[in-house]
Image (tube, rainbow, N blue to C red; front, side, top):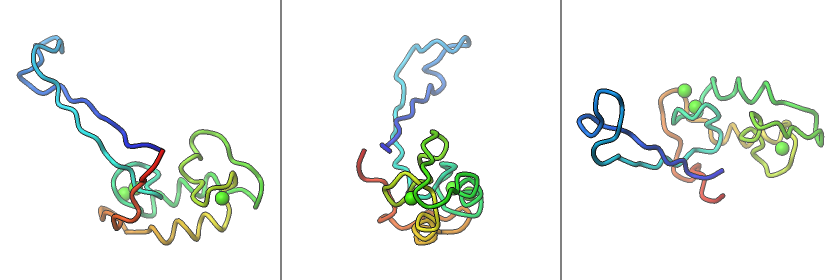
Length: 105
Ligand SMILES: [Ca+2]
Ligand SMILES: [Ca+2]
Ligand SMILES: [Ca+2]
């Protein structure tokens, strides 16, 4: 998982048709481990997404929606991933500690 770069067309740099006529603002977000819905916290909604991906131990969950639920660097989403997830849990609208930021590709 890598940081995501967003682009924003800010008025007045865009005309009425959305054509860029000025500078585009760019900013980068750094995802948190366990923030499966990318809203900046690790809460019950994220746990719901993890639950959908739960598998038995050593049963791979390789479909893309589950890639962020694989938190312990193997291919399954099992109780070990739940344990890791709970260590990142911050609660609604609360950013997890910085050590939970994704730091590499
Ligand atoms: Ca979240
Ligand atoms: Ca796992
Ligand atoms: Ca949330």
